[in-house]
Amino acid sequence: MKLIVGLGNPGQEYNNTRHNIGFYMVDSYLGKDVSFKNKFNGLYYQTNISDEKVIFLKPQMYINLSGEVIKKYVDFFKIDISDILIIHDDLDLDVGMYRLRQSGRSAGHNGLKNIEKCLGTQEYKRLKIGISNNKNIDTKDYVLGKVGSDDLLKISEISKVVNNIIDDFIKLDFSVLMNKYNHK
Image 1: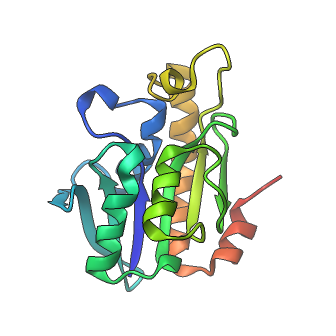
Image 2: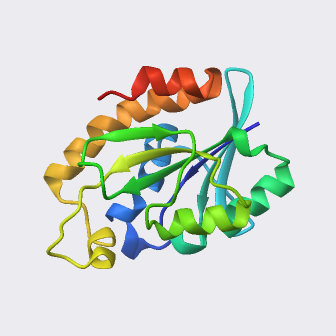
């Protein structure tokens, strides 16, 4: 069983913010006709893809507490850490860029810090989606700011690639996946 988690903040006021790019990517992959269920402070959708059970999760606690929700799903559904993919925003990548990582540090992302704390490891897979960084705006205000129309167009374009990455995450070894999609 695979767990694909899109990070974001719950609530209408956070729709279309940079921090909610994980929610955006999950919604883009699944489409609008999916009915999420609510369990353990998370909205989830369970399906089969390529003969593999897959749960898509959008934690409904603030992003800084995402790990608490993810841990409950991992325990309840008995999901191995190696079968988790976290999709999240990344300030160090330009808008329209993405990067797959096998593991690593949080790089100051409070949602990832909480996931590391709750799972007890940094050894979980992630798909980092670039949101750029504006050093003239406080980081908190920037990540909670709305995505502009130019950036939204770039994000929409890479969502097509992200859809392919999700499909391949279910079928391929992660090192093969990184070799296929991570470009210099």
